[in-house]
Length: 315
Image (cartoon, rainbow, N blue to C red; front, side, top):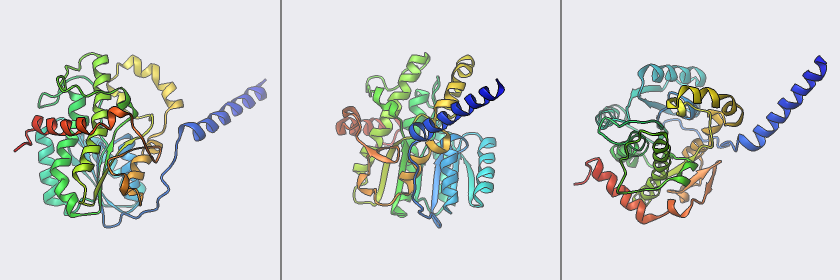
């Protein structure tokens, strides 16, 4: 009986490994591009996809800045990455994307202390209720507006270090997103509103990369939006505890690991020969066509202009 159970367990495990590596894991970036002498900034690099992306950048020899909200986990992640990569040039800098004041302070410190910025990876994301420090819907404010402001303030440094790249972590959730210019700041109190705000913010990420690419033509700065796949991260940390407990076993089995989920971000940061696809959307380490509402240049342009207004960037 024990032998039958052991054999059955082995067969099940073998089938799971077969399914994971063929249908869940996805492609891996195979580029061996060195980043020695380059500086990479990764937001939300203390955990999950961001940490694994930063680890890869460090292994390639880059100077890596972990821009994170929580000092304790940010410094711990920097320590881990230095140890695992053998690269001592991995630093934590505090950044709260839910605060315009924090973003401006971060950029002022970064620009005064770091002479280079070659790759900006807008990785951080949130899914929860509430408002930002400046009164924006928390999800839309962090996922879109926070990174919009950060990119705006760092863009000149990227232009000085060309060829340079910007990677924006979006999501296939953009499919269900919509940009309602009459209601960009919903209350975000119910889970239905929170999930819709998340989808809206991911659509905004795709449109932002598209419009940014249009504005960067001729500068040798390129940008890409990416879908990491469905990944086991702490994005759902604000879900009710009972729901986290219920979903975790299934998520552990069926979702990508953070390292597997980081591959498309890594690909768009280092892969040679993709510059012609600036502004496009990538998934599974390849460019993909998005649905019509995510390639509407008029909406992308208007979203850019409205975002500037909301952030007080218009002259």
